[in-house]
Image (cartoon, rainbow, N blue to C red; front, side):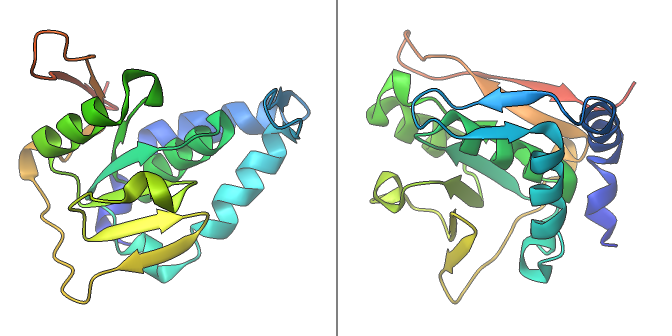
Length: 171
């Protein structure tokens, strides 16, 4: 187990316990009609986490930009499982605003369900539907001040500059 996986362990253990306790609960993706149980989500994340390339990203900042809400949920769970700081983005703010948040937060990785959403973004690693697209000179900067940060939630940036609030998994 990589050392950075410990970062999200507290959050992940809490989430995992709740997914297991409510295994038969269902999430319905209204736009696409697919139904997932909590156990389905847990199994999917646990299967992805066995990918050593994904595990190597522990400690990185990871932007999440998905069209489907369920894919955003999966990406967020994966970030917490692997020990990445998640930066969820909303298409409701528009791509210009998402790009502004990306420029401000400087993520190492982006997880998306649509490669077109990543066009023009200066990010070394892009993960789309489990497939990793990366530049050959990947360098992930582990920022010590973010080592306990589970998620960075950004504002809409209505004043011109997006701002983030950071949540830690530490009690």
